[in-house]
Structure formats: structure tokens, C-alpha cells
Length: 185
Image (cartoon, rainbow, N blue to C red; front, side, top):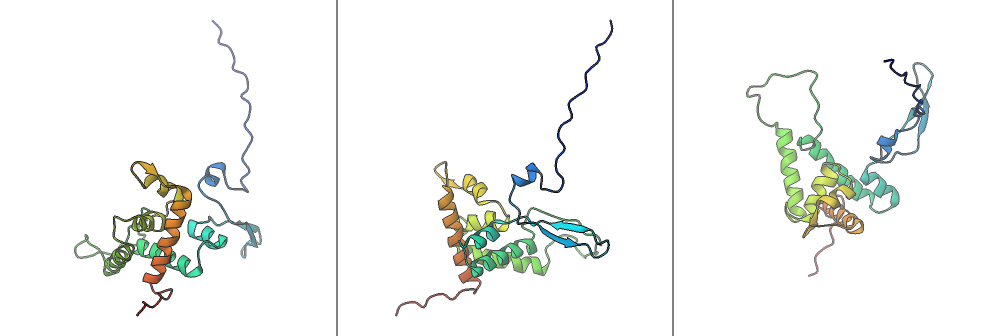
């Protein structure tokens, strides 16, 4: 028997490499492209920045600069405390005595995160959960709302955004970025 020849496969359209891929666009938006000339070669370089949740909310006017700074401060503490899920390997390893344990910087960052979670009503509260997942671990508000809910029901997007705004307000007060109103006498 003679085997049949397979016909030519149709070539699929090539993806435009000057734009973010379809896969990347489904995972978040980008700011407008910025063009610069490379100082070494003189070639035009396109700079794109992935937009984070806090940046979008600041641009929309949903949060103030102080609230944004409080979120950035907590996110930085998460990275210092090594709570974030992204880890990198060290290019130069420094030998230690024990090899196991946390540095003073990591311990202080963890203490400050614990104090911030306490200011948000404790670790079991919605505000603390929002701070942990949305601000610290950089989940989208939608992902967190689907994960967190009551009686098996997810949170509505408007409710989840409201919880995030309230969380950022409390964090801004906790970190001293905004003044707390004086108590009535």
C-alpha cells in the first residue's frame, strides 16, 4: 500500500511581537507605550509597564496618594519579610553560622505586618485578608473576591473594591500617612 501524502498545513498568522501577547493581556493591562532611543545603539526602544491594582485605582481617583503609599509600604514589607511567593536565587551566597533562620530585617518586617493586620481587625477579618492577598501577594481584586466570601458565596466586585479602599484607609492611618481625627471629648 502506498501512503497518502499529507497536504501542506496552513500557516497560522504570526503574532505581532511589537505588542503584548494575548496571554499577557488577559493577565492585566499595560500603560501607554513609551518610546526612547537606546543610548548605546541609538535604536528605538518601546517601554511598557504592567499596571498593578493600586496604580489603576490611583489613576481612577478611587484612592488617594496616601492610601497608595500605604499599600506600597505594606507590599515592600511583604517582600522584606519574604512572604511573597516569588523567590530569587542569590548570585553570591554568604556563609552563615546556622544556615537556617530569619534575618533581623525579615523579623522586623514580619512584626510590622502583624501589627498592621491587628490594626485591620485581626488576621481573620476581611480587611486583613484583603491586605494579605490583594496588597501583599498581589492577587487581583476579582481573584480575591472569588476566593473570599461568606456562606459559600463570593463577594460582589463593588463590595470587594470597597473593602480594599477601607483597608488602604486604615493602613494609611496605621502607618501615619494620614492624620487620625481627634476623639470627641
